[in-house]
Amino acid sequence: MARLLALLVLVPPLAAQGIAYTPGNRHYREVTVTDRVDAAEGTRHQNKTTIYRQVTVALTPKAKDTLAFSVTLDSMSLESTLAVKLPDVSKYKGTAVSGTMSPSGKVLQTRPPAGADAQAQSIAQSLSRFLLALPPNASTGATWVDTISKTEQQSGGDITTTSIVTSRIEPDTQLQGGKAFRISRATVLTLKGTAVQGNEPISVQGDGTGQGMYYISDRGVFLAATADQKMNMTIDIPSRGMKIPVMQTVRSTTELLP
Image (tube, rainbow, N blue to C red):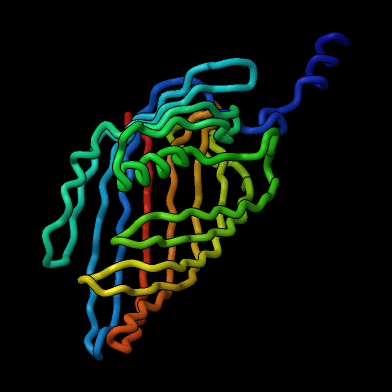
């Protein structure tokens, strides 16, 4: 009996051991809805764009404290209320990124698709961040801050977005029939860059905030996520002496498929 009690004392609860992803192949559906309102030359314009994606995440043991990962885009489609021809994004089906990561999700090395165009590279970059990275051995109540800066080529220019993200592991909950850790995320965003629109150079700057919640099971499986973002931007068209205010909201949901 004394030996059993000693073992019970020495083995910490799961939360104290940290959250770690487990090997396996899993499929997810992601829906991102962007609502945008601008006021150009005194006229209010509003549109909505929805992006649908399905991805496969494969995790396999690589070495001690290391997992090999690959994230593959299985399908992608667009819907929009804009009266324009939408780009064909179905051609990016099969875009994948692979590499190695720690069990807590920190990416150690990536191998983006070779010979891909700028849009495919951007998709691969987003896929590499599909799983939330957590500090090793983080447990309930842990809080940390990440600063993320990314530059994307858009319409003949570069747009840089910087995010300061404060994350916290909240008390666990029940989801999909089992215990799940909740990780809240509060984001402060800034955006700045240039682009070309209708052969006219423009500059863009803005700021905003975001809130999100991620769910990871006590078995180390990413289950679901929700994220909301609101940004206020200004588009400057020097050739016309015009500044256009823009308000944009983004709602994203991710779910594990059966």
